[in-house]
Each structure stands twice: as structure tokens, then as C-alpha cells.
Image (cartoon, rainbow over all chains, first blue to last red; front, side, top):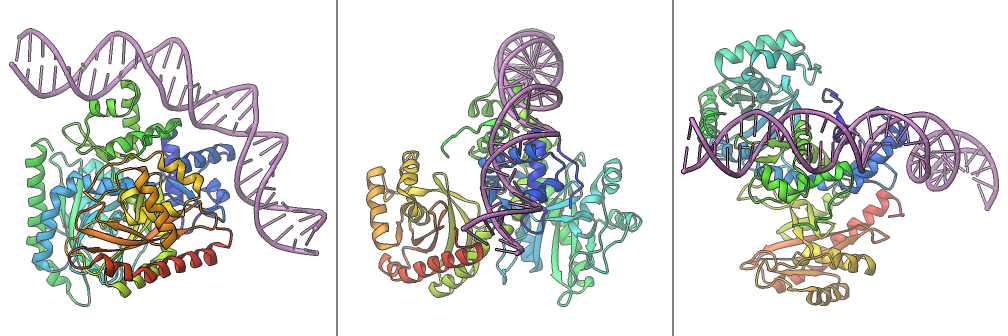
Length: 259
Length: 259
DNA sequence: AATCGGAATTCCATTATATGGAACTTGATT
DNA sequence: AATCAAGTTCCATATAATGGAATTCCGATT
């Protein structure tokens, strides 16, 4: 449910179609897409044809559409080649060794956090991990940490674009609550997710940002609430902050002092 | 190194740029891209701008480019929603339980195989798995199995587009050897990768195809050669073929008898 | 099997957008 | 500071996208 900032230009329209397919709970059919993206029949039809031609979209036998495997191929390269992720990787692993819990790395993208990497002991339930998963900023540790690291202007702009949705009973309900929380994060240097996204799951996160605060991200340690108390999480604050600090230092070394 | 079938239309050009970035060993700079994709300066520059605007591409501080995180987001959805993968998933898991070795699911896309899923006991070395990884058809078990399942016409067309590259000393060197191998696969119903892609790694695979042989894929069980002999692999033939058969049956049930 | 109705696809004159050559700016190197 | 290469912007032109309407396809229903 990203802020439908209808893309401009031919490419933007095409991506809009992909996003529409991506955000549909079930594979949309032609008519479904017709009302999801605001385009005339003929136009949409050709766009879909092009997307299929490029392998970005696939038809299912019932004439519904799903995202194409070319995206997997590209994403695989995107992940492997991502500079920030590469720099951060050893620090994620160290933080995981120190805490024994799952560690996430996420970057801010619009009003969402996109998870770039994850380190966990043993994935009992196999999953495509969390990588690429997009979650709202206002109810994740990484998201709130990233928000706190933004410049005031950028944050104001972004916050006004958020639409709040109550994921759990702890989810921050509105802008007011979020701003209070951000103040707290800026004071303490760490962000908590107190079961605000998934019931039973909480985490502690620290912000990561470039020198100019244009690029913001976050690192977090996540644990199930039944096993780790929020106080125990809080004790990891120095570790999480240390990892964030170390990543930022590595960035300035590897990327030049500009960022 | 995919068959540069330079995409047509505005969208195609854009994807070409993405592919160029994806296939570069190191992040390309503007001039690098200029000769990778055959486009005039001004045009390329605007295309890159558009791609960045859409989050499909990112600039690094040294003016080189890397793929953007939006691709991860889209791919995450593509993976989760993929119908074929969803249908195959339980069968992969069962095959893994039966053999105790790593199981792969891949689909044919042009002259490459794209891995859709993977099940393994314990990933000692953490990795973004193999998912989305693109490998040549002619030197992977899944790839050769898929080739064997193609209609003669489609296979001929595809084979002529392959450029052979010797990955290991066992890699099939040319079309002739590949055709012999395909005949063998069609007779026996299973394909072997005899350390043809990675030294020390071999696998046994079985083809999966839709009714009309338009869609082809494969499932494989992989093992290190030092621990599992090729004879032991061969004993799993019924299991691998059984899994492939079961997936095809499920497809016709879930997707209607047409495919 | 035949009919009907909604959905998907094709068509083409019009319009908007991408194109690409050249001029310009930036920033690194000596 | 000067030079040169790399990156960026501009704008008249060519090309590709647009969108309304007509047509075909498909799948219910009888």
C-alpha cells in the first residue's frame, strides 16, 4: 500500500502496473488492473504486453497476472552487488554472534523500509528470508530509527505521506504518537518496536545514515517476546549502536568522506 | 552473458540498461554503460535518470551505478506469489527429506535457468540462497532436463542461441555433445550434471513441463562429489522423477488440464 | 450443442514522448 | 592554473505511446 505516487513517463507507467500486480492480494485479471492503474484499455493492454515480453510479468492460464521471474534474476544481482549491504554484512554477523538473535538490515524507501539482509541462527521455517520485504516505517524498529535520522524537512515531508494502519494493539496510531516516539529515539539513540508490527515480536534498532542524512537505514536485533523481555533487549543497546556506528565508519572509509 | 536480444520499445531499452548493469562484474560508470548499450549519450543519460527515479538503479558516490532496492521489493513479491513455485514447494521439501541433500527448482528462461527455490538442511554459509540465480542451460542438471522436455522446434531454436563456455573440465563443449546428452536424458528421463558447472558438485535432475511443452522447468538433488558418488545419485532417480511427476500432476489439478 | 454477455484484444489517426547531435559544465590530473 | 576527459543539459525532430471504438474471444447458462 505505498503512496501511489503515479510514476511519470513511459517507464513510470510500466512500473505502476508492476506495483499494482505486486500489491494485489491475489493475481489480478485485466479488468482488475484496469481500475487499479488509471489507464484506458488499449494503453494498459499494450503496457502489459510489453511487460510480458520483457519477462517482468507472466500470464497464468486463467488470464490473471503474476510478476515474472526476470525480477528474481535482477534482484539476485541487485542483492549481491549492493554496496551498502556488502559493507554492513560482517557487522550484522558480529551482532548476531553477540546477541544470538536475528539481525536485520533495512533501508528507507519512501514510506517503507526495505530489508536488505538478515542473519539468523537457524531458520526453522524456511523462507525467502525477509529480504526485499517492504514494511511500514512507523511500526518497525528499523523504520522508526531511520525516520529519526532524517533531516527535519525530509522527515516532515515523509510523515505527511504516511497512512496509519493498526497492525497490532501496540501500533502507533497517528502522527502525534510517532513524533513523540521519534523524539525519544533521538534522545536515546535507539528505537524499539514493542510488538507494533507483529504480535509477539519485538526488537531494538539503531539508525544508520550518510553524512548528509540523505541516505538513512537501520540495523535491528529481533526476538520473540515470550523468550526475551524488553528490558533484556534494552541491554543490547550498546551492541546495536556499536554495529550501526561501525557500519557508518566503514561507509566513510570505503565510500570516501563525502557520504 | 544472456543472448543480447536488445529489447524493443522504450521499456525494452530501459531493461537493457538494467541488464547491462546487472551483468557487469563491477559497477559500471556512465561511459562503461555507453558502450555496453548502444545508445547516444543524451538518450542513455535520460534513461538512467528515469531508472533512478523509479528506484531501479542507484548512483554510488563515485558515479558508478548499481541496481536499486526496488528490485528486491518486487522480487520478494514475485517469489511469494509465484504459482509454479507454490505448487512445487511441498514436493521439494519431501524430496529433500528423502535424500537429505539440497533440492533445487529452476525454470527455463531463454538460454538460462533461473532458480526459483531451494531446500537444504542447514546453510552453513549463509547466502541469499540460489534464488534468482541464472545459470547456463547446457551445464546444469535442471537446464539439460528442461531442454530435453522442449518441443524439437523450440529446442533447435534455443540451442542455436547458446554460446558454450567451459566452466569446468567436464563442461559439454559444443552443440554436438549437448544433443547426445539430450537424447540420453529423453531415453532415461533423468539428467546428470557431472561437475559440469562447478567442480566438486554434481546433481541429478528430472524435467517438468506443461502439457503443451511450452513451459519447461526442472527439479534436482545436488551433492558434493566427495561425499556422494554418481552411482548413489543415480539411485535417487525414481525419487527425483517422482517429485517431478507429482509437481506436474498438481499443476494440472490446480491449473486446469489445459496446461 | 447453441446462445448470450462480459472480458480481452486489435486497430489507427492523433498526440505526446523519446530521440540524438551538439553545446556546455564539471571535476580530476598534471 | 591549465588541460582534458567525463558527465550533463538542451531542443528541433522523429518515433513511439495514446485512447476511443470496433472486433474477437471465452466461458457461463440453458
